[in-house]
Length: 169
Image (cartoon, rainbow, N blue to C red; front, side, top):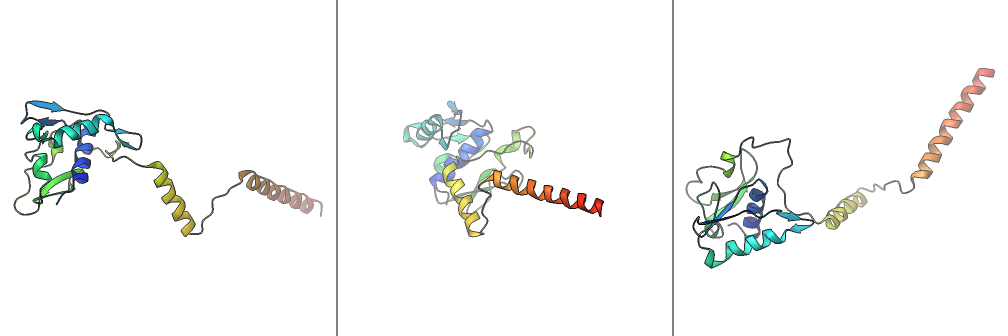
């Protein structure tokens, strides 16, 4: 079963590639921009999400799909990476899968040279994880670069003095 968070992420990824969502059974379309703002989803995306899950919006479909968002939130559906482009796609838990990936009409996709859509990242939490991994491996970063430079310079001076002494002997 796809969680509400997985469905939000699924829509956010496709919005980043320019896919629209059709609400009111296709009578209105939305495409929030930007989708991500700093470490969270943008206000525009959050407003769009609230519109999508509102019962007054009727059936809402991502452009290029046949499964409504309301259906995706039932136990019959899951969200998994597409085998072709690794973007999130809905897949039925039982029965036949959907006809295809929403990327079928995106020219030049998948594009491995362009940045892929992403979820918001909490920079502080991510940096803390990196720090913790470094501490677990007992790797300590050089804290004072000037000390390292002085040590390197002293080593070079020692090498020069030794070569000079050899020339005189």
